[in-house]
Length: 139
Image (cartoon, rainbow, N blue to C red; front, side, top):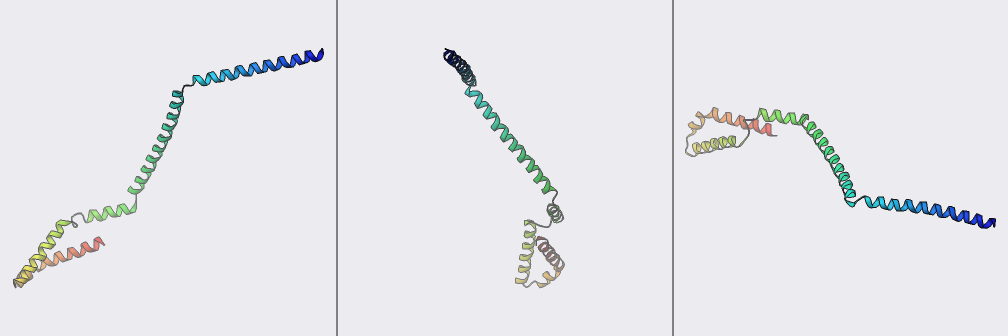
């Protein structure tokens, strides 16, 4: 009979353990059901949103650093200096002046008015000098 009481004791303990674990399992299932898919969706959306906000912040930071380096660069300073020095020396208006002078000289020469060319020699030499300086500046 001792075998029977020992067997019933083991069976009772096993049943109690099984019942306990089964109740824990059911409780876990019920808690899973209380987590609505909408909550999971919101959590994922929040995680993704935070991820992209961090990326955006990183991009803005890098962009600010690059902009700062550009503004502080030696090449930009040199370019600004060249442009400020030559602000009024480059452009299509100069080309029109040079072209007008070229046509004028051509007409004087065609008509045999060489003294008119010589009379405006200083003007033409000034334009030639300006064109040469501009060519040097542009190269």
